[in-house]
Image (cartoon, rainbow, N blue to C red; front, top):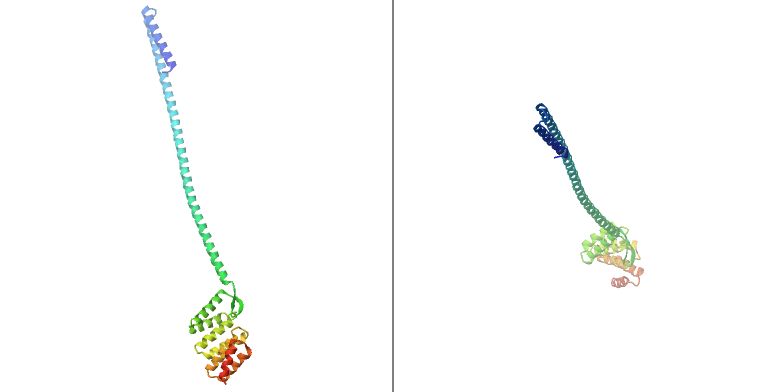
Length: 268
């Protein structure tokens, strides 16, 4: 109960006591007493109505304050929930970015590896295309790696005794590398393979190409001796004897010249 209400209630009680005392003492008349009581009752009713109004106003104000507080709390909760939602979204975005960064790093790593592999393959191919300095039968010259490989493959086949296959390989080699530094040696070995399979006519033709193109080649004395031997195998004794003499005249002091002299002597 509020203090004004307490003060007014005390005043009302005092007034009733005064009225009661006055009635007992005979100071007022009955009508006056009734009017006084009515007045007091009216004042009490007015005080009670005022008190109820103020209580109602206070309750409304309190209810409004509570509603405002509730709205503020709800607003704060919503704000906090919005912040939490934003944080969760940020976390999700960060996780997505991490995944994208990891994939990007993997892609970059893969590209770098592929680039290294491609560079290595390119370097190897360039090295394969770079000419090499080779020395064959006393002659030094530049040759491609494939050229060197093909010549050595044909020569290995010949040395294995597969003369037919060797003829094919040396013929293909000369067709592919017509200006090769290997050409004189390839002609010599092709003629030797032809001689080995008793293809004397072709052997003579092939070996004469060598003698015409490179008469000072290391294999030239042997080539001319093989020509003479082929002629002898073909029963062309006169031609063989002439070729044996040419070997001695053009390549004196060589093993081929010594063999040619011995065989020419036997033909006399």
